[in-house]
Image (cartoon, rainbow, N blue to C red; front, side, top):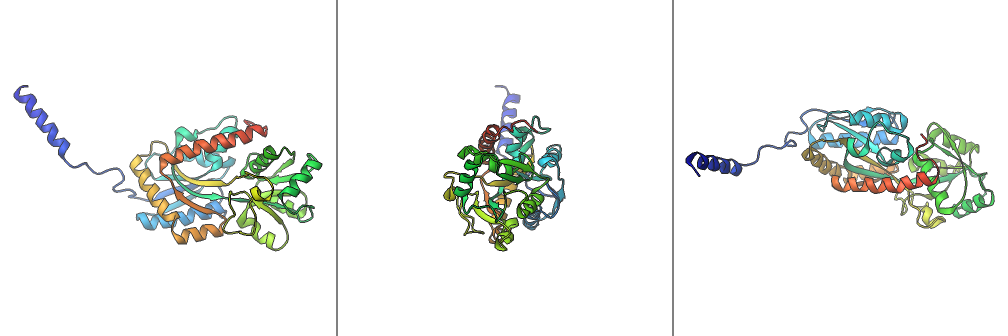
Length: 327
C-alpha cells in the first residue's frame, strides 16, 4: 500500500468513527401535519381523528390538522394520501375497508394498499351491534338464525352499501350458519337505521354509539355484538359468539397510514407518539364513549403483517358471498 492509499484508508476510518449525523426524524415535525379523514365532518371517525390530532399536536409541538375527503368507500381519501409527498406531513385515518376489504370488493383500485400506503399505527377496533326492529319475534341471535332457516331469503337487512363493513358482517353470519338473507343497501347507515326502526327492514349492524340510546328507548332490540369479548361500553350486550354463532368475530378497525416511502425514522417516531396518545386514560375514555376500543400497539412492520392477514380473512368472506370484484 502506498502513502496515498494509506492516508485515504486512515481518513475513511476517521469518518466512520465520527458520530452519525441527525436523522430525518430529529426535527420532525417542523410544520403542521394533515390527517385526511375519509368521511364527512361530524362522524365518529372524524371525531376520533380530531381527538388524536389534538393530543399529537401537544406531544410533538406542531398542529395536526384534519382534512375531510369523503367518497367512494374511502377510495378518494386513499388516492389523495397515496399521491402526497412521502415526508410525514400527510397521514390518513384508514379503515379496514381501505386497507383490506376494498381489494376483493372492487374490480380495480386506483391505489394499492401494499405499495402506495404505509401502516403507521393501529388506533382502535370498532365493534358493531346486531339490532332488530322490536316487532321481529326473536330475542337472541339463535332465534334470528332459526327464523332465517325457516324462511330462507325472506328476512331483509339494511346496510350502508354493498361491501360496507356492516354488510360484510352479515355475509360472515351467512357463511357460518348457511342461512340466506336479503340485503337492502342504503347510502349510509343512518337511513338504514331509520328504516330498521320503522320496520321497513328487519335488522342491521351498526356501531354502539349510534344504537345505544335507541336500544335504551326501546326503538331497537340488541341481539349481540361483533367483538370477540363483550365491549366495555355495553357490557349487557352478549357477543354474537356466545349468543348463537360460536367463533364469530368481526370488529372493524382504524389505522393511521402514510404515503409509501415515508422515511422509516419518521414512521417510527409517529408510531411511538400515537401509541402513547391512544393508550392515555383520557383518550381511552373518550374512545369508549365513541363506541371504540383503543388499540395503540404494534410496530409498523407488525401492522403490515396484520393487514395481510385481514385481507385474506375478509377476502374469503366477500368471495364466498358472491361479491368479489362486483363494484
